[in-house]
Image (cartoon, rainbow, N blue to C red; front, side, top):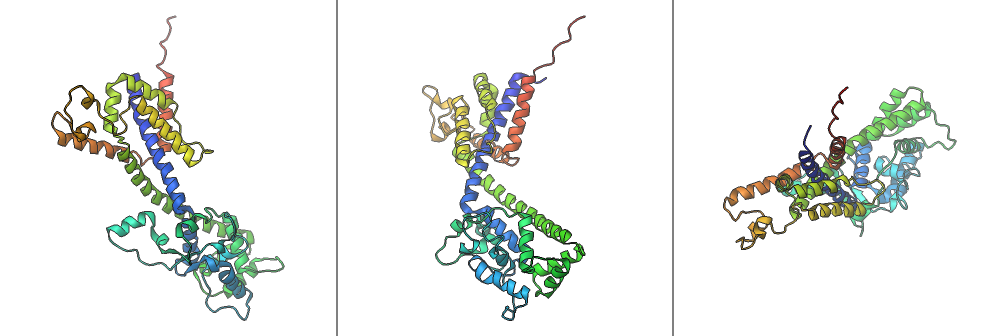
Length: 387
């Protein structure tokens, strides 16, 4: 059975990993909302699905031009255009998706996405794609609109059922509401060849004469693609989380090696931090990001008050009377006793360990913290009483 001191040491380290990861995730969510990343990824994902990124998607003309042109073509009107505009614009300009998950209409957003182009090369171009990757770089604002503010007002979620309804409404404008597979098949085959119609033709073929099966196929097609879009979004924000976490680690001087050494050598600090960690939990679902950040910062401050070496205060070695220390010695980056090169390398290694600890995420560390806490509360198995 592990000793109580070792368990407290592990609890202290895991607690620091968990709170730092949670702070980084909460800060990343604020950045994501400020940049409007969720809505932007939904829009670019929908565009890739139905347009393959080949057409300009202009939300300002979604209802007045794109949706009406598709409706005219589906009805076979004489004044229908020969070349159809973006299907993503048409779907978002229709009555089903036009106002879903947002205030007002999608056509009030002054956003335009240009056709796909090869990404620029070079270091600064790659760094720029961290906050504006892939197709987000092709998103511009019409008129005097601001791209970030327009993106923040986009819907962050569209259900597969709503998407299927919008597709059927777009390609089968049936005034009598009697939509059959025969009607859907004829309407889809009569439309010009576009990425959307090619996909719908395959779905019509697989559905046979079952409208429900066709609708289910459209929903599954949408869900499968949006799962990939969610993966793109998570990979993007993971990079932001690592960058934000690295900044937090350096600004707050959260060094895994220094913290581990203190917890190992100081029983008072170890016990106090373990008590703080016992109260530490991840952000609750009903908390705002500001409340979460405030609570997590309070937990980290409580750990520092308990004696954990967090922050850029003077290290204990330089706090002794008549200690001769320069600024770097006082911050713990160098040592007044010599071997400052190794001391600096160890400081960098401690920072690197903290950044690597962000990869599993706060949920992993808080879950591990709960399991370790249960292990400590269980205690050793009682000895068998003599008969």
